[in-house]
Image (cartoon, rainbow, N blue to C red; front, side, top):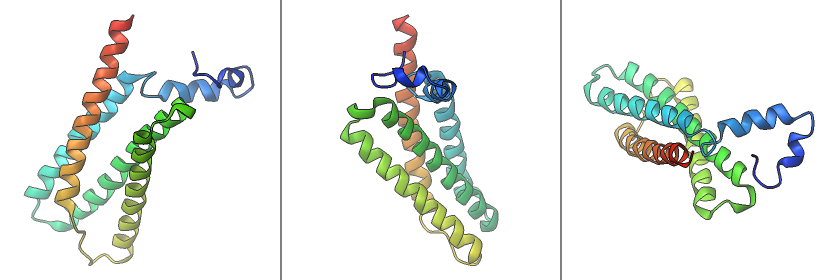
Length: 155
């Protein structure tokens, strides 16, 4: 059942689109988000290991730039879906998380663009970013696992 304020949309020609978006909301489909967050956690852990072990900086930087942009974009999508779903009941934490995620995605896109336009310039703070992302996706995985547990035990 859609949250308050969305029922009228299900009666229009946009019903399929709204239903499709609702199916992506973490609270409505926690299994999907457990999978996504665990994949992001594994990828972040792999990125962390790559930073330590890869002596060839060129591959590492390209991999890092793609990873950084992709992981922050996934984070933005997850938070946008949560804020959209809760509409007027969005908490300050969700709004703040959305702003931080959007800023980090923007910063990743700018770094990606700078690296492509100036290939000799080093990317700073790879290790810190990878550690923060690994911890963040560990937390996100735990949070969505809890949502999945609640959904399974509520039935």
